[in-house]
Amino acid sequence: METVVMHPSYGKITYTESFWTGKKSLFIADKEALKLSRKSFRTEDGAYMEVKGNFMTGAVLHAGGEAIRLTPAVKWYEIVLSVLPFLLVMVWGNTPALFAIVPIVGGAIGGAIGGAIGGIFFVVNLYSLRAVHKVWLKVVISVGMLALCFVICFLVAVLILQISA
Image 1 (tube, one colour):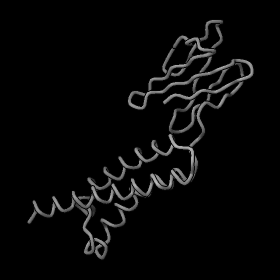
Image 2: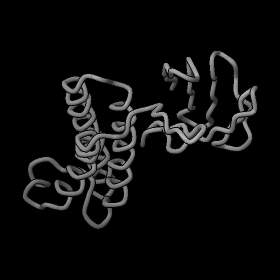
Image 3: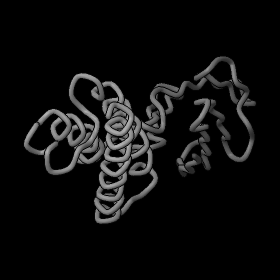
């Protein structure tokens, strides 16, 4: 993920972070800063800079006693929308009346599987929401993730029920 911030003193600041590895790179005025460690950099003129946070939580560049926000902090509703798939799996899978309507993984045997699926959808949904700026689109994405999580947990439950029968 790449973000560009215009700053009055430093000019164009380009921050890049890999989703898979978390590797960070920093460009100040289109010149790459020398990477000293995982989150500290030095510019060509010798200025020391440190990135705190990441794309998921919100990245802030600390340079010369100044904090420059590179990516926005996670919002409360993004967390709530992302935790819904996990909660759905845990509540539905452990409620016998709901399980009788539509079985999904949960309970003693499928709880770990359902929890893992819900946890994966938590992370994927939160990352997807961070890439989108419109709130209505975040809600649509979250509803889609919730439905997909439910379908996957249903298919896993059907597979487990067929194997155990």
